[in-house]
Amino acid sequence: MKFVFEQRPSDSPFVDMVWRTQSESAGSFMSAAGIQWEMVVMKQYGKTFLTVRGPETKASPAPCPENTEFFGIRFKLGTFMPKFPTSNLVDDAVHLPVEMRKAVWVDGSTWEVPDFENADTFVERLVRDEMLVHEPIIDAALQGQLQGISVRSVQRRFVRATGLTHGAICQIERAQQAVALLGQGVSILDTVEQAGYADQPHLTRSLKRLVGQTPAQILRRELPV
Image 1 (cartoon, rainbow, N blue to C red):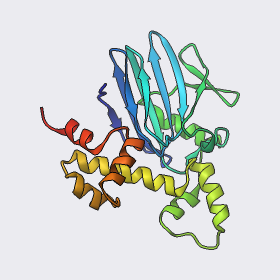
Image 2: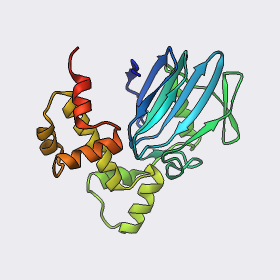
Image 3: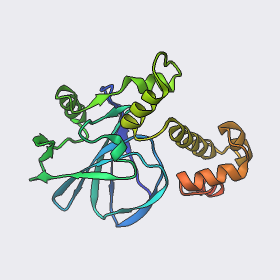
């Protein structure tokens, strides 16, 4: 099942991107592993649903309902909601109650359901009410600029904010790099070398677990018809 995504950058330093798409017929797709969490609004037959989806550590099949509009806010790594710690959302999701298609309950307060156009305003309000924060240690850790902080403290704060270990993030990002290389027509052996895998079986095992496809399958889907 294929989707056509429209996406845009955000003015918010807390947001990676804002996207939307829609489905016509029911089906399923393979959801690949990802290091970021997101809020997803789904509208179908006059009903609205809002879901907070955590990072995913493995590929898994996901159902897709028919005639449904989807809109999402994908947050930058290290951004999290203290009331919904990312560590509790890994490979999971929280469904927030929506009333009359317009209001969503978040931590006992009523909020207007965001859309593709006003997502930045929604995020700004979350930040202002201290319901959305950013853990600065994440950026420092990823850039190798930590000093004077114990390893245990870094690991604890890293997992609380991202839900993942530094090692897990590196594995997922390397798999994403490999998929991008294969999508550009780079050969499997060259992808092994450029993405830093030990050998072709190592690449294959990683992509099957994290993306749900083998390198050969990814190459085939990118070939022109």
